[in-house]
Amino acid sequence: MCRCVRRAFLCGEDRLTHTDYSHRKQWVLERLALLDSVFTIELCAYAVISNHYHLVIHLNPKNAEQLSDRDVAERLSDIFRYMRCLQSKAK
Image (cartoon, rainbow, N blue to C red; front, top):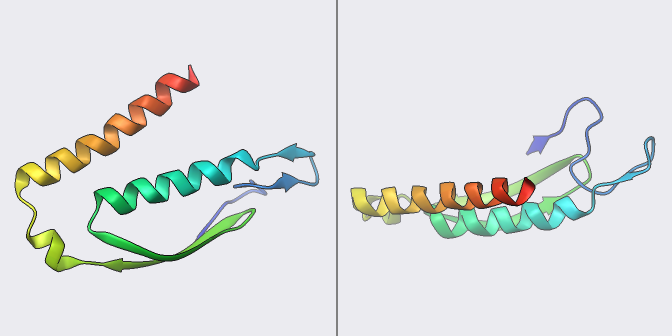
């Protein structure tokens, strides 16, 4: 579980400020799909709520042991490429 602090909202509408953060839920789901595809994990279940989320993840050490150093580097490169793409869209 990961929780936001200081009344921050992950997604949904903040009733105090009337700010809608619903668009963030799709971003969280896309990020989870990316992480599931890059790392040797299986996302078994999730719940994304207005100020926190829950994840049930299965770690797969057998798959991790089969990765070469090059495989690991390529997977990390995929993550950072995705992050750079997001940063360029924000500008």
